[in-house]
Image (cartoon, rainbow, N blue to C red; front, side, top):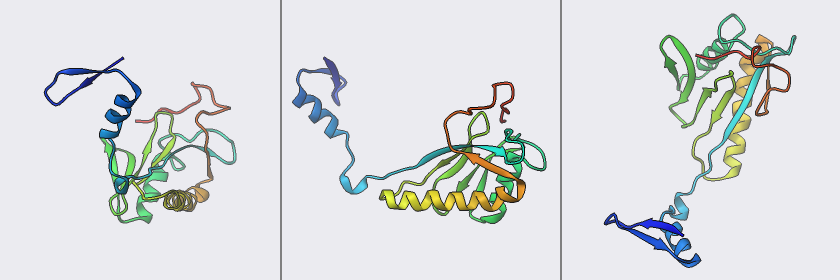
Length: 157
């Protein structure tokens, strides 16, 4: 059994499936307010050595973020002290952030359908390639590195 909290603060016991369904449905947004959001993580790596990309340096995470920002006037930096750790798309919503091991994460805007998220992801990859290709940086779109040990993995600010 599950306790259900009412507006008065008393806990009512959910005793059957119908009550559970009713309780869950009461918390749902109306169908016309439903949205889809994309989260896509990828590890940057050097295409010549297949090694992970460090935060600082000429070919780095910082350089990728600075390059993306320079290409898009409506992207604002997300800072931690003097370190850029992400970009906020002020025009379209969504952002690019860093995960602890340097993964780039697209946190997409809330969109109406999967077709719009597909376009958003393709646009994101196009922007990344524009900046990353000249730096010799590629991306591995999986949840964990199959090659790098923990000691070889850079730590982000």
